[in-house]
Length: 365
Image (cartoon, rainbow, N blue to C red; front, side, top):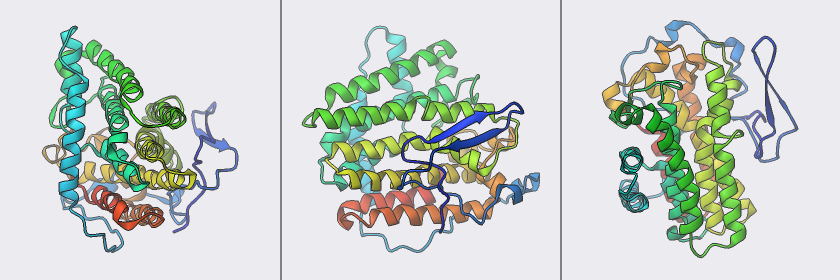
């Protein structure tokens, strides 16, 4: 598959809001490790915008991934055991104390379940470069705190206005909008405190690098950039390139930071870190493409959140711009690219990461 060089390893794209409110992408030549995930054969001008795109029959999602022989590995048990460690650390990080309401609200969303994909990826990335998982657990938990903050804020009425998250009422529905805003703020602050004070046996240089990675993933060149462009794009025609920008920043940047921080903390060299960065970028977009597909093929009960919301709000999604079948094809291409990046590492150590790509591609919620 050929890739267009539109997203660099360090933010080289500039998003300009022109006088006619259309978005123009411009910037420096891309970093040599960078690439876009959009196939050249798919042109934004030629894809259907018709509402017929969404007249799908309810069916089991099975992406058209290439047939890979995955390393023999008990992925379900691996996820279970890693999640137990993450959940214990998260529980210990926020004891019930005064002010009771804010700590109750923090625990409500942080301990509400979820697959813990990002923290477990952080730990797996640490291990694939030769580190011990214990080194990465504080960073893994920090990533989950940041992710939970983003969900709380994303669900607010002024943002995506959602009532359901992980099968439960959203934070602002339980505690009020004012407390929900403060809960997100508190979790973001705690994330950096936690990784800075709880990480042991990692050099100061690597710690600074990891914290910098986390910070850039959340700020105006990361998650916030994706969110603000997403909000500005509501009710407008969005191209595939613009949609990729939104999701690379809104969803992908934090997942990328989780993987890259794991590799840095685990002692990875520059090549290790860049390989894991590229792997993570594939997973970040893969996660969003699958999410878009599930939104139009699954029910709210199956997803644990409001289904069909993108269709109701006429939001730009991959199935809308590409059609369902081409979106599924893109899933297969992203899995292939992710697995190619892992071929550089020891197969046994990389086994969880191979299975992660397969898991995200075939997840049902």
